[in-house]
Length: 251
Image (cartoon, rainbow, N blue to C red; front, side, top):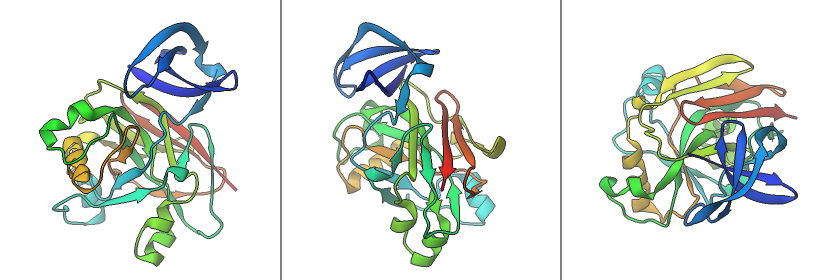
């Protein structure tokens, strides 16, 4: 099932996407909801990020093929950092190129959406607490990341966390094709089976550090092929079983 969040009739609503039609649902997608007798054509809707995270937790080097590309040793434990909720961008929303940066990069990632409040989980306990998965673009001001030595400024500009377009539930996410398409050209092309730390290991590890809330997002790392963007560029994160997240870089 694919859950979607959208704006229609001046209201923010949730729905279930079936091909090009969206069936409206009422209730809390993190608890109980019901499908109502109302549907929309997808092309008529303004798509929104499919959840509203209180925080976005990101994972650094987490793909074997990316580590090989960079000549890095595999980490012994996940390297994590955060993006603020204000960094979230909707599908199809333009992302502003910040004036204080001279190098902005894309990073295609699979994101986990947390279902309920969790803390101190073991990996075996994780699965029932995942609502589903979505596409994520960890946009980064690379020059500022290098200059600062830590990552907060480089990762936290408004719009630097495009998210969506759907939350795919009941998805086996450990063997999915993942791509970044830059102006129509495939730049990143890998599979989530290349992850160093599994999805369950990541959620468990992060839950040992902080309480995770419903709708919180964990971005699980990027494959090889990271590159830079210019104003006017079109970026598409495409993940098997989920769909495509498209954004444009603007002035």
